[in-house]
Image (cartoon, rainbow, N blue to C red; front, side):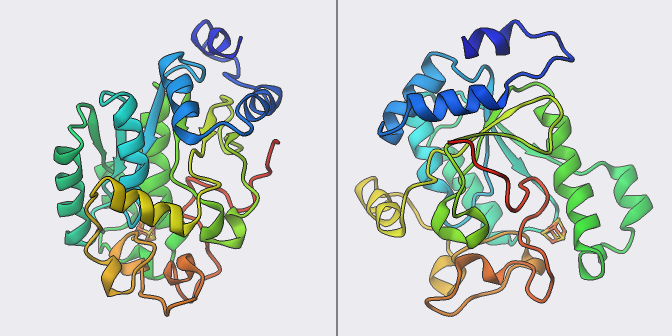
Amino acid sequence: MTALRAIDRLDTAPRFTEQDAIGLNRRFRGADTQEMLRAVIGDRLAGDVAVVSSFGAESAVLLHLIASVDQSVPVLFLETGKHFPETLAYRDALVGRLALTDFRDLYPALPDLEARDATGMRWSYDPDGCCEMRKVRPLELAMAGFDASFTGRKAFQSSTRANLPRFEIDTADAQGRLKINPLIDWDGAQIADYFAAHDLPRHPLVERGFPSIGCSPCTHAVAPGEDPRSGRWKGWDKTECGIHKPGEEPFL
Ligand code: SF4
């Protein structure tokens, strides 16, 4: 049902509805993550799906899970031009280690950068505008060819993610794309166990106090026990970069 709607859609028709998201959440209630991923990818329940990965502190887990099902699932990375060099090296290492065959860097448009961020310092006085041109727009363009995206969001990361479901409609997208959060109910211990069980490499900044890693100007180390995402956009009333909306409502 859902897959047919996605594949046979008119270009202007919503790909999925809230009822689709509710149905998928019900269908996979109690199913483990691997079982859900095999069905979604193998049976194309969400149509054409890409993974959006930050190659951050815990990204290796979702990428490994998906690569275990299909190494050709497209992997999208927002190459903002502001990443830590350690993140870029980690990205390259993971792409090789997991043999991801459809990895894509997404770049901001050069005219946008020249017109709105000639100094490269927009992050310091307008982080929303900076994220808009370096993340939101490039991802919107890239997602034109997809019906749904996998994200690595987890409930324990922050209060704004605490109530997210596995399947949700992307509220920022008029086309009714699905966002799929396979790890939403994983806790820190499960993540650590998965890293150990599969001998996955850690992002080198984790041991330096960065449990959540984004662009270098907007990411700070946090103290043990603090909200893992509290080091992002420190000093600003901003919790997400714009590709995810805080408080997106769950469909259970
Ligand atoms: S996280 Fe910071 S540097 Fe990166 S795009 Fe957003 S505002 Fe710009």
